[in-house]
Image 1 (cartoon, one colour):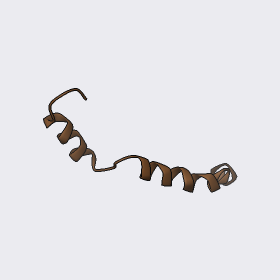
Image 2: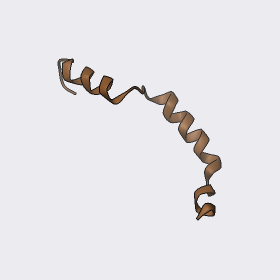
Image 3: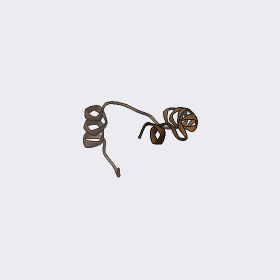
Image 4: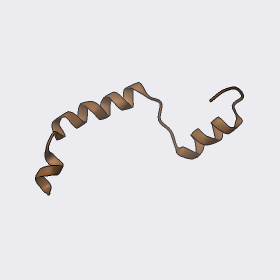
Length: 42
């Protein structure tokens, strides 16, 4: 099963970097609290 986990691992770094760059990240409680308070469509 180790082999299965290492297949395509070289592409994973780029994918993770792109996700971190393209999206804003935060703690779940901060995100949902902000959405509950913010007016307008979500």
